[in-house]
Structure formats: C-alpha cells, structure tokens
Image (cartoon, rainbow, N blue to C red; front, side, top):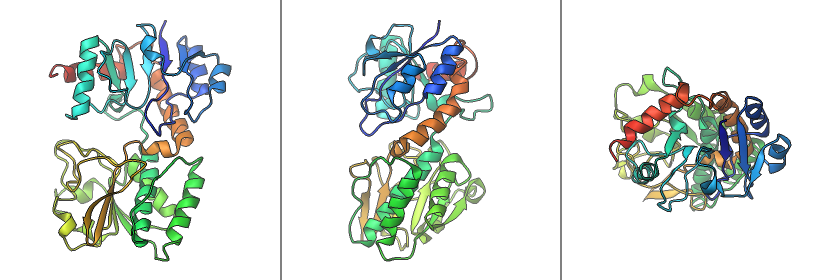
Length: 351
C-alpha cells in the first residue's frame, strides 16, 4: 500500500502545506495511507487532518519514517549532509546547476533515494501540473511596492511577515503607499500572461498601480530593453533557462533611469541564465530589499518563498492543483511521477 508522509516544514517563515485535510481524506479513500507530522507553524491546523483519519506523527520525525514511505514537503530539507534514503516530493532547486542543488543530488545518490521535484511534475505537453506562481506574483508585487514606498521616505524596506488573508495584505499595502504622499508608481511586467505575472498584475490593479504587460511577443527580439528603465518598477516573472534574454544588464544602476525597484519574482540569481544581472543573492523576510545602487537608489527584492506570506490561500490553491496527481501515487512508474523520475535519473548521472 502506498504511504504518503507529509513532513513539517523546517525552514523559517514557512507555514504552507501541499495537502489539505479534505485532500488527505480523498487520498485515503483511494487506498493511500496518509501520515502527517504535527507542526508548530503550519497555517492549517492539525485537527482537520486528525478528523480526516490521518496518522499524526511527531514534528520532524520523517528521517525515521518507514523506508517505503514517500516523504512530501515543499521547501528544502535541512542541509546536514546526510544520505537520503526515502523517495521525496519537494521543490529541489537542483536541476539548473545551483551549488546547493548539486549537494542535494549527491545526498540522494549516496542514500539511494529519489527526488520527485515539484517543479518538474509536468503533463505530456511539459506544462507544470501545480504551481504557487500566482501567489508568488501577488505577494512579490506587494513587497516590491513596499520597497518603493520605503524609498520615498528616504529609507529601505524593513521586515515583511505573514498575512492572514490577501485582503489584509492589500489593506496594509494601501496604507503604506498612501503614507508616502506620492502618486502611485507605474510598473512593467515581463511574463505577464503566466501565473506569476497574473498575480503581479492583479495586486497592482487592486492598489491602483498602472502596469504594462509584456510577454513573449514583446521580448522575442532578444533585447536590449530600454523600456525597463522607463518605469518605476520592473517585475521579472520568467524562469531562468537557456536562451532567456537579459532584461537588466549589470551596468543598469549607473544608467539614466526612472527605475527604482526590481521585483525578481522568478528569483534565480545564482543561475547562469538569470536575466537580472545587477544582483547575485536572494533577499529575505528580515531584509527584503538589496540596494544595488545609491544615486538614485535601485533596490532588488528577490524572496524565494513569497507565497508563504499568504499561507492559507496559497496552500489551498496549490493543494487543489496537485491533488489529482497525488491520487495517482499508486503508479509511480507512469504519468507525472514517471516523467519526474526520468528527469531525476538524468540529472544524477552527472553528480
């Protein structure tokens, strides 16, 4: 019998979960055993899972789970170097040459485990079956606008945190923007037709920020893109991959520009294919803005777990998208799981 073990997230500021109590009940009705770890941080309470008939395990006990259990989490595992013996479902960030990702793959190779990377669960046409993109864009747009507001007050953005709802986020952001006494800025979104770009646009529209939408047609010529400099904010919503053009060259800070804030929602600064060349590291909840030029100021915000700012809504949305695939866990050799395993095997050959 297939056994899905949902682990507690161990990363700071991470309250999301990829399975709701209702989804857990559906999995068990389909003959899949579900264990869920208790968690002091998860946005969805444990009692719903208990009522759904799940087995409740102690927080962070997954290393001692039965060897045949499939361990399911969202963000990265503790970087303790231990060999990984289980089959894991998570966002590995390991297939684009990222240094930490290469270490992760070596741990799987050493332990004989398998990575089913959530980013690479795709349908036959190569489209991801589930993504947090919309809420990443929504929250990322809010953080970038907070960076802009802080600049208007002569400073740099302070810490950000969790919101109980999208409405609470919008109310707080509108108050922040109003406090500057300035007219709303404008923005350019590249990748505007995708999930991430749609989230960015919806947040901008909700708080009165005019946003120009660009997608493949507008970027097909490969650059340069002087229009980026002619907006107050720029949002990159395109994943780094071979052939991605450079949207923000390394010398952008010193150029004549209106641009004041870059929201790199795709957030892949350590990839060789990153289209944003003015920064080389992610930003954090504690320090969301990285100042890359002083006069005039240019800040980059690039937080890699943005949907965690809205953990309930983003969890419910993502879990609903992923559930049809989880219901096929009884056949790991086929469909999305077979394709993800093939990708994993190809990637581990080189490590």
